[in-house]
Image 1 (cartoon, rainbow, N blue to C red):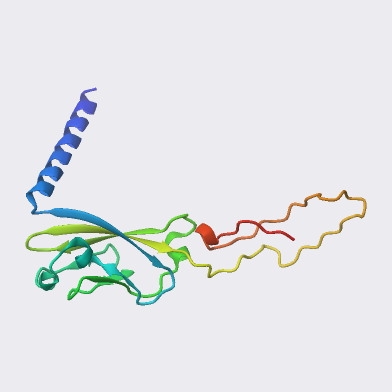
Image 2: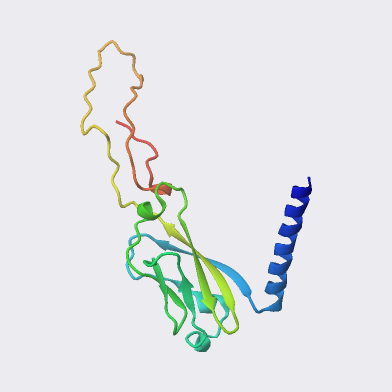
Amino acid sequence: NMEQRRCGWWERWQWLVFFAAFLSGKGSLAQIRYSVSEEHEKAIVGNIAKDLGIDVRTLKERGFRIVSDSDNSLFTVNQSDGTLYVNGKIDREDVCEQSSTCLINLKTILENPLEIHYVMVEVVDINDHSPSFLERETRLEISESVPRGVRFQLQPAHDPDGGIHSIALYKL
């Protein structure tokens, strides 16, 4: 019980500090969301500065940048105008595997005064993979005495595409 009270107090304290920093304007916080189709090289995702109402003349001197966990970021931001670009082709299936939605979270930072903005980019699937079956060919021998409308179970196909482009139904 004592441990639960101490944990609850600490969580309230963290939220209070976060809220105070947010209200002070020194650590401004915002989140925006974009979407981009996979497989588009050097595509424009959106203009972060314009969408957040940031003065583009101050971006370079304030060190506007994306903070990434990896050295090979999928996105880059132009420090002159605040435009977010795709660095190269994004293969949704490589980045998000079989998730129904593919969301990539980015954190952008401006310094002096400090502003942190969270950008969420949804990678939209395109139908760029053909479904494949484990066996290339299946042979069925069906007797003439089988009643009309009988169904036969086949091995399922594997479709790397997700979302609306995944396999819905196959009929023979």
